[in-house]
Amino acid sequence: MTGGPQIHSIIRKLYPLCRSITGNGVRESLSIIKELIPVNIHEIPTGTKAFDWSVPREWNIRDAFIKDPRGQKVVDFKKSNLHVLGYSVPFSATVALDQLKEHLFTIPEQPEWVPYRTSYYNENWGFCLPHRQFEALEDGPYEVLIDSSLEDGHLTFGEFLVRGALEDEVLISTHICHPSMCNDNLSGVATAAYLAKHLAGRNDLRYSYRFLFIPGTIGSIAWLSLNEEKLPRVKYGLVLAGVGDQGSFTYKKSRRGDAEIDRVVINCLGHLDKNFRAMDFEPTGYDERQYCCPGFDLPVGCLMRSVHGSYPEYHTSADDLDFVTASSLEETFYLLLEITHAIEKNRKYVSQNPKCEPQLGRRGLYRKTGGEKMGKNDELAMLWLLNLSDGRHSLLDISERSGQKMDSVIRAAEALSGQNLITPQN
Ligand code: ZN
Image (cartoon, rainbow, N blue to C red; front, side, top):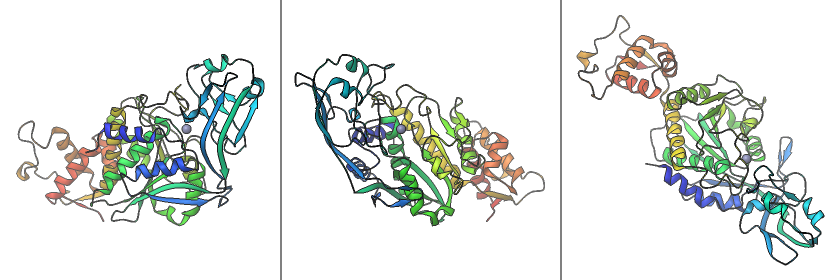
C-alpha cells in the first residue's frame, strides 16, 4: 500500500525541476509521473485558441545569474530556479545597480526567503532574492544574464483515464506549473499520481476517473475548450492543491454548493478532522474557477489544507521539502481513498422486509460479544439502513442523517444485502 514516505519521495524527485506554464520542466515532470502511471502527454501548439485565451509561446531557460562588480555570482539560477522571474525574456547586459533594482523582487517581511514571481502575459525580466542580500548590494556595474527562450512551441499537459464500468466520470485536476515549491504545487501532483496508480490497479470501479496534470488557468481553459463534449460525463470533481502541509483540511465547495461531491467530502472530513473548514465557492484560487464558470458549472470542489496566500511560506522558497510532511500527505491520500469509496458505493437500497425490523440475530448480523467483526456502530448503521431504505434515501443521505461514517454505512449495506434484507435500486 501507498504510504506518506513514497508520496514524499516523488516530490523530492520533482522538486528541482524548473516548471512553468509551458516548457521542458513540465515535460520532465510528466516523465517522472510516467514511472508511476502511463499518463498521456498532450502538446497544444502556441497560438491555439481556447475561448477568450490563446496558448502562449513556450518558455525555456538554461541559465541565469547576476555577477557583482567583483565578478562574483551573487544570484544563481543553478542554485534555485526561484531566483528567476518566471517567463523572463532573454537578457544579457551590464547594468547599474539602480537599473538592476527595478528588476529585483524580495519579501522585506521574510528577509531570508526567495519569493516566487512570474510575468506570463507581460514581457519582462527579473530576479528574486532574499531581502537581506538585496540590502547588501553595493554600487557598481552588475553583469546580468538570462539565457532563456520564449518562442512558438507547445503547452504540455498530462491526462490519465482510469476506466470504470460507467462512462460517468470523476475529474481530479492538479496544477503542474510551479517551479521548486512543494506544497503548492507538488503535493497535489504527487497525491493525484498515487491515487491514479491505486485506482488503476483495481478492476471493480463503477465510475471512470480522469486525472489532469495541467498548468494553472491556461491549462484548464485549454482542456475545457478541447473537451466540451465530455463535460456532461463529469459527475464529481476535485481540484487538489496544497495538501501536504501540516494545517487542517479546507474544502472549497463547488459553485453549486450542494453538489454530491460537496456532501461527500464534507461528510468524510467531518469524521476525520474536527478542525476542517468548509468554504463557499468564490471565483479565486485554482482551476475550480474555470470548471465552475457559469457556462459549465461542473460539480468540482477544491481540497486544500492551509489556504493559498494564508501562510507565510506560500509562494516562497520556504515552501520546501520540509514544509510538506509524509504524514500529512498520507492522511490526504487516505482521505481521497475514503472519498472515492463513498462515491463508488453510494446508492439507494430498498428494504425487502419493511414491516417491522427483521430479526438480525437469527441471520448472524447481531454482535454476540464485543470485539467481533460487526461493531456497535455497524449495528446502529444497520438499523438506520433498514429504516431508511425505502428507495428514497441514498447511503450518503443515511450517513448524514445518522451521523454514522460512510464506511460503516457501506459495510452495513453490504451485510444486509448479503442476506437479501435490502436490495440495490437500479
Ligand atoms: Zn501557486
